[in-house]
Length: 171
Image 1: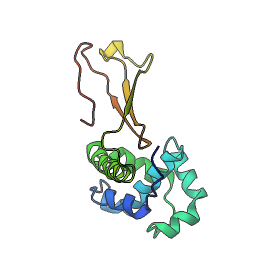
Image 2 (image 1 turned 90 degrees about the horizontal axis):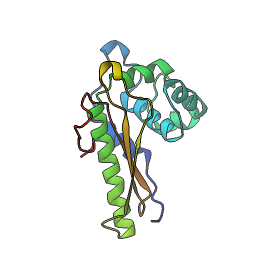
Image 3 (image 1 turned 135 degrees about the vertical axis):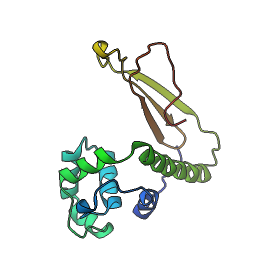
Image 4 (image 1 turned 60 degrees about the horizontal axis):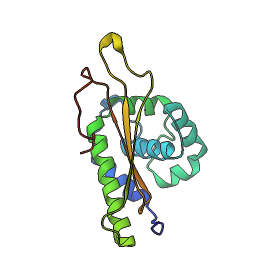
């Protein structure tokens, strides 16, 4: 395993600054990048939704208020819910993948490993199909770069065709 590489919060903020804010001009009390960075940090810490993200943020309030622009304090759960619901998934994924690529580049430089070993695992979620509407089951794939300690996860939404295959979502 490669040596640990510290990632500064400013690097994470920089990756998501370019995202278009999907909120109306009325709902801009909290900077988008602050809401997203808090949500990402909370999810990485194990939060499973807007309520858990808000609870985590309240617990980490002192740290977050020192590191992020929070002119109106810690956002409430409804802010996270609205932002996450209206955010364009492709745009967010592009920023997230760029961040992972920058981490991979730094890990490659630090470890000297140019072609890491990739462990691939696929799963099909039982009973996630919807026969009534002709939808197949949900599928997910995770890829673990063992030399770098990085993982990437993607999911395939159900399709109406059981025989049609699609490439991995981030390819």
